[in-house]
Each structure stands twice: as C-alpha cells, then as structure tokens.
Amino acid sequence: MRLSEFIEYEANERAERRRLAAKKSYEILDRLEGVDDQFADVADDGAFGSVSPSIFVGRAGYPEVSTGLLSPVGNEADAAQFATSGEWYTEGVSIGDVFERRTSLLNASQSTPVETNVHDAWNGFLGVQREVAIADRPVGVEVGLDGTPELDVGLSPGDVSTPTGPRARANEATLTENPHVPRPVEKTLEDDDWAATGAMNYLYGRGFDVYEINTILSAGALGQQDNRRLVPTRWSITAVDDTIGQFLRGKQRSAPSVDTVQVFHNEYLGNSFWMILAPGQWEFELVEFKAPGSVWNPDPEAGIWLASDYEGKSGRTSYVDQTAGAYYAARLAVLEHLDAIGRQAKALVLRHVSDEYWGPVGVWQVREAIRHAFDGERGESETFDAAIRGIVDRLPVSMAQLRRQSTLAAGRQSGLDAFL
Image (cartoon, rainbow, N blue to C red; front, side, top):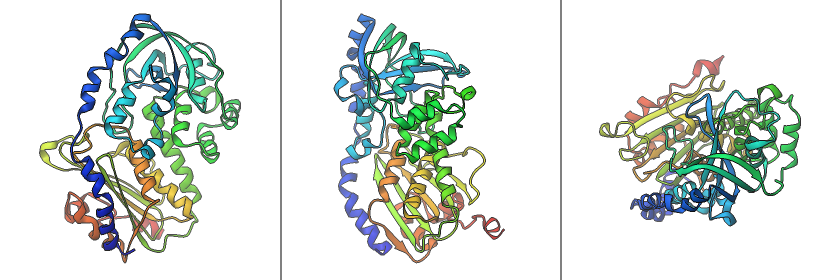
C-alpha cells in the first residue's frame, strides 16, 4: 500500500497498544521488595531442588567471572517460561512481566577464572552448568548454597542483558535427571577442531535460534578444544547476533536488490521501530532517539538523545560506538528478512525509545519487534528520501536533526565504495 495509507493504518492498528502502555506501571517495585521473602526458605535450608532452564555468566570482576545456574524456585512447572526467548514477544510480556520473571530466578553461582579451559568440564558445578546449557528443555538440579541470596537486578548500560535475580554462592550442584541434548549440539561438542563461528552457523542452519546458541556459547561448549572458555552472557548475546548476521550477509552478496522502497513499522514495550528498505547494495544503519525519562538517555536535561552506527557493503571491522548490542540485534532481524525473500537492500532502522520504556528488559525486544514487523503490512514510497519525509513527523526529531546524525538519511553513504 502507499506510504500515506500505511502510516494511517499503523496509527489505527497500534492505537490500542499505545493507550494500554500510556500509563507507566511501577508495580514491579513492590514485587522487588517481596523478593527476599520468596527466597527465605531457600536461605534457611542451605540446599534446594529445582528445575534450571538456563545459565548466567557475569562479566563483573573479569577475568574472574561469576558462573551460575538460574532456577525459578517455586515455579518449577513453568520453568521454560523464565528463560529469555522469542516466545516472550508472542506472549506479549510487559516490562513488569520481564522483571518479575527474571527476579524470580535464583542465581546459584561460583567464581571461575575465565581462562579455565572448559573443554572437558563435565564434572562438578561447571559440568552441571554445561549440561543445563546444552539441553533443549529445563533440567532438574539440586544445589547447595553458602549464604543468603542477595538481590542483584543486574542492570547495566548497553540494553543487552535482561535483569537478573537474587544471587547466592553455590557449594555444589548435581543433576537429578538426565538432560536431553539435541544431536546437532552433540555434534558441535564432539568436533573439537570446529571453530566457534562455524559451529554457531551450523546450529543456526539446523533451526536453533540465537537464544539457544548464545547460551551454549556462554557455557564454553563451542569452539576448538584449546579455545573453549566461559563467555559472559552479555558478550555471547552480541557475539551470536554478529556472527549469524555476517553469515547471512555472506549468503546475500550476489542476491538481487529489492525493487521498491519499502517501509515497515512496529511498537513494543515503549519502543517504536521504523524500517526502510531501499534498492541498492547492502548498507545498514541504526539510528536511536532516546527520550528523557527512558532508560538509556544519558543526559535527560538535554532532551532527546540521538545515537547511530552504520556499515557499508563491506561490513564493519570494529565494534559499534553508540548503539551497542541493539545494532547487532536489529541488523540480524533485517538480514533474516532479506534472506527469507532472497534479496539485499539498503536498510535504515529508526528506533524511538519513549519514556514508556522505564525499565530495561534486554536486547531481545529489539530483535523480536523488528522480526515481527516484517510479518505485517508494509508501505511503499517512490524514493528513499520520500520515505524518510513521510515518517519524520512520527519521530521526536526534525528532518534536519535526523540528517545531521544519520549517514543514510543525509546521503553520505559510501558512493565511492560502491563505484569501486
């Protein structure tokens, strides 16, 4: 449909969602005050049995890292719902839901030097952690604790990781059942001459989503024998998004371009995303507008905070400067769509982080909002510039402000690179 019709359609389609999100909910603050009571029995007993759906490797204190088993004490029957996944978008979880789920996970952890080679770590605490990481469903565990769980929500700049719950030092851990490990995962474990990037791409090609792959990578279960190490969860998330993104980009280098300028839109958890795909060779840019009162605006008094990162057809050789993990998550979602339609394009993603995004939930919401945007309706425009002009009134900045920040909107893209 024409872009003007698409914008009107989007306004009507999203109106109810915006209305429901208009009033911030701080009920989770009351929830956090009650977390200590929830885990009081665990602290008294010093040991507990539960079901672990996932693991967590921290980066504080690096190269000594905290490596833990996550267990939803008291919610064992629904353990799978507590692991971060794309299903959270399908369920329509709120910011409060994310905080409640994550703070309901007890992080039973030990401190481990990151240089520890975990190639043969099948015994003790690290062995149990690896078994949980490679299993395709939550695993029964029994954990002995030393000390009282302390709440550590785990919020940090970067918009990558989800919040974390109470943490307590673990003395030991044992499995109470045999984990079920998919055959493709066993294959990557058995081949210890396989580089981690190749193993990640193999698993993705066998239908594993990035959530499963980054957990396996974090546990040090991928890569060549001498290189297998624990990887902090925050780093593994971005590493997998980046690796799979580069893999998909490689598949598309000779693909034909999209033949029209296409506009997609989605809103989720106080974030509004506009995606513009235009004819041409691959270029990608993420531009973020962070409102005062939103989570990651570093200078609310200055008003809207603008950030952007860009790559041309040759890709990037360094980590992004301004948009962190959101860049790689957004790029992956765009590349997945282009891979599905067998095309390449010049892609601009505009992300408005409103003050309704009052608590960070993790970069998964960027990935899923963009993934699902491509499943919906789209608008079309005569030119790339006309597409930007058509939606700029829906953005919290002017066209002049956008052009000062954005390489693609300003027309500063790599024309010489394309000519060569």
